[in-house]
Image 1 (tube, one colour):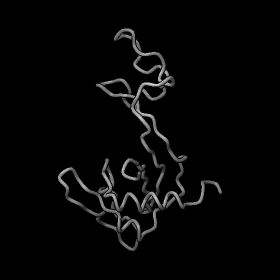
Image 2: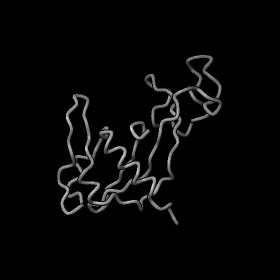
Image 3: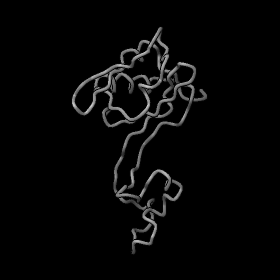
Length: 137
């Protein structure tokens, strides 16, 4: 389902690229996480030590397992799709990107942070990523 997907985007010279699409698989402690803590001094997820800098185990964080597309920097979002993408905030207000001129993003401030796409935009972006040629191919 597209609404459960997270997209990492990168702006390079006014062109917005999809870097990866991630889908949360679960938030359960699994074998890959390592042994559960016996004491507070034990590492929370020894199987994910490389990810400690993202907060796994700190401040109530939990493991998150994702299914993701390969990371790439060669998948530009077409200008017509970029101008249609719409986000909805927690209050239900929608907005599109400002500063899209001739399919190029002239100012990336509106993309900095975490935002929820509307279901229609999420479906459009999911279809674009799904239909895109494979990286390196």
